[in-house]
Length: 439
Image 1 (cartoon, rainbow, N blue to C red):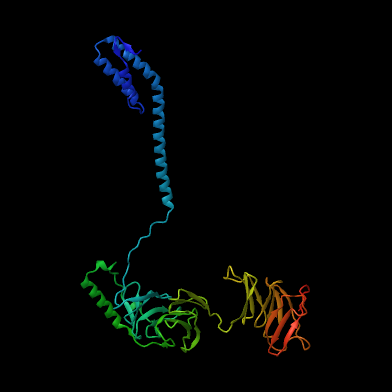
Image 2: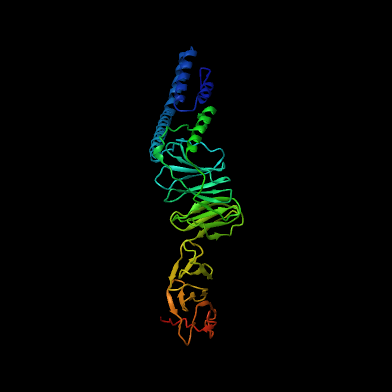
């Protein structure tokens, strides 16, 4: 079919089909084939017929090639737009990010001959820090100049912690010699001329320079040395690992490897309270900055929060109220209802006029019976609303402190509340739940 004067056209079509398949390269290949046919065939008629046939074929495929080229170009433009958009969006988002922090050493404080256990910043307006070291000394440094202003040498063991008084110029140190010392941290910053900070790292200082700097720091320390404490706090039987000032500054709390923490009076050195309960050595103690709260940590994998706000106001009773509440009573004349899921603050607080003793909760009716030192027995609900007060006179009621009460869950029985007191009486009461007693 495809032959002209014996010239076979099929090989030319096979070659045309094998032309590159992408975009305009098909047209370019066809044009090249036309040029080859014309240049290699001496018969002008055959060349003309082949050329005409190829041109007709190009007319058929060229619209598709042009459309394909259009979509290819559009796709490339779309990709460029996406790339540009992502780049610009990334720049905008990065402008809202916090700048990367810059870290560098400003000053260094040299002079200790052994490891340094703790560094503490003064709470006063003075620009000083304190350090506690295993070389049995504590030192006070100028933050700006890097010079040692005062060295304390009163301990006979490793100095494990140092804390500054919240108001006065006093320092508190704990030591491996089983004591804690209070000493005056009086320094005069104006007498020491500030020097340019040296060294942003040990790698920047040669060995000989390190020795000179150490000798310089030691010579400054030797000018102001303290060896006698104003108060020595004793009582521990093992290493005192840490000590801290209480919020008001008149008491000190110490923690030791003997598993105890002791609250000391600063003026007399007497023991006010001893905190026990940890199973292994204590590792740290910290006092709250504004409240009389203490937290101790231990090797027994626990830390404990101690409330010392009023050591005389003890929690006298705590009972469960249902599956998710606890009711507590205290010498501070309050009763509090707590949610076990959130023990940060009570869900109800009841204020009374007398200390609270061993209370009882009627689970079925959610009622609290509260016995008092002043012979009263009051009844409240778990929301803190008062239901009533039991009578107290010569004929009925207690004549002395009521120590304990107990509900009978069967409120229909003859006696559904029982009480006892220091008047040697045990009374059985019938409480009509539906009728609220009036004061």
